[in-house]
Length: 209
Image (cartoon, rainbow, N blue to C red; front, side, top):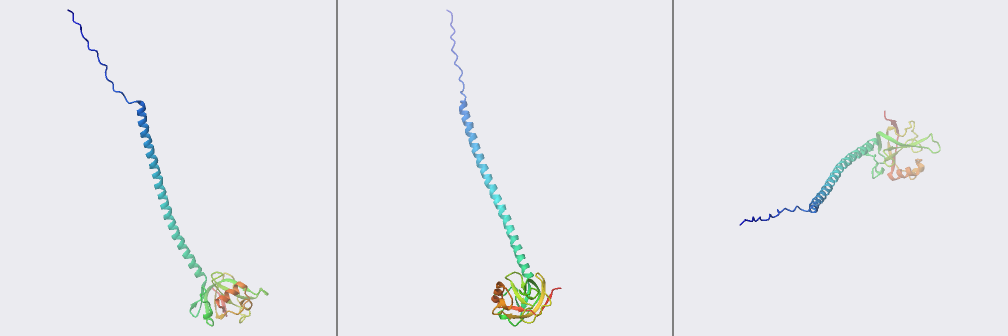
């Protein structure tokens, strides 16, 4: 009897099924999106930090400039005060003009070693005739000095010029009832003499050497 070999049919090998390419693509895309999202966030944080740094530096420079500006301003004011010179009567400074005016100093002798001539007042009818001049540091911080004209002796042999430094002596006199006509002043100047209550009637004026 012949044998029949029974061959057991071979089972096909089980293959591991690789993930679908679509699944791989989806995973990679998801990771890429997350990375790109984090990158945008980090970039935003970096810009924010840079902006804060710039603002801090700008504030520091601004504070430094303000400090220098304040110092600079303080120095200019001191210079203006010095430029006006020193004018006093009875031990009381007349420049800058006192809040109480000159009334309480009427009759006392005013002296100045170095004051600046702000403007010169000439006779309107005869420009060659000097009436007086203003000394001080500005159009408001000034005192009128009568030097020539009809108030007192016509002493004006020396004619000071605007910007010139002079020394002077003379009594403080009360403001006239009508400074415009008595002192030959314009309306604004007459009002200033009236508000100060007086002026200096110089009897000696000389240029500073």
